[in-house]
Image 1: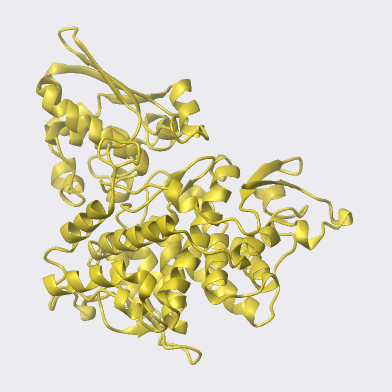
Image 2: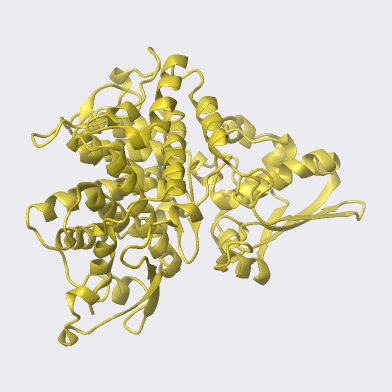
Length: 506
């Protein structure tokens, strides 16, 4: 059974024993040699495919071009053979591969998610763990074990410790989880992983302004930075360097000054010794390229497009009221009080965090596309802008309760909608989870992950390269030491022009 670990702030004179510190308990989980179960192994393969699909679709977007250019200025180091970068055959130093690939995976906001007390994209663990695995010549089994740990630690932290309430970005849980996953991959001892986790946390706490107002390209870089810091933290710890202790519980530590304060306490679930790491099974991916809380709303809007075409014309609509959870209302709804969420000239990063925009476009189009639905032409269409400005959100306590429920069978990320027409007709409907959710109308299974990859890679990757990669990914448990390069994907000739990259310092 998962054990709840009581975590609170300690004064320095209380001298909290190392083995009682959360970072040490995380390290013990990472160092536990327990085997990965078959269903978890299969889900790891799904997420490797999922990450690759969204990364490939991003290869020529600005943040990826810049991050890749930076990575290419850092050649492989002497203690390994380096790591691959999505789309090209060049090898770079592992921390820079984690950086470039992390940006590519996150850019479209299109990979997996887990939501509880905090928000997360657990697939962000894969780029740094895979980069290190390729650098050291690890096997597929080693990689699977590392990824299972990364998911486990991130999900467990997300279940227990809220960051956004204190305006701390959610990647503060990613640094420790990626460091722990790398520790598992490399078979490091508890003390080394403990120091890695502490350093990774210490260097990855930042504010949520990266996801507020006019959202910038840093949104995609933030998790990549956390992954890069995790790689560097492990390297330092392996060289005998230590971290602030206790990093979570200290009177000048993260909890006391960045989170709930000196009187705070949390109950963090972690697997017992010998217990399989299964947290990846609680996570879910995206069918649509948008913030996860938008997934169900896109599905509901598509349904309403077919059933009520009259609601797609702003001339017929008086108002659209979306009743949803606290998070959806205050972060990506009208409760955020961000005028940019209603601006037709807003950045793509802002629009994919605007429920009013997303619901409007999906309602009018009856579909969603990772590029076309965000184009300036689409956002600026007059009838869209008119209808969009009639959409508001409000918090519904019951949907907030279901959002935070620990019962997976009732946990929900949707809500209800009331579309009031000018003739007095009120159209109502609701949705609890996205169609692709494990409890949704059309849950994602292996074939859906493969179809997502094929769709996003079409025209970017040659057909034979698509087939080669998918075969390698599905054979991941059997890949031997040094064979993880097979998880690299090369773009078709002419897709990437490295000379077009912007110049920088390096």
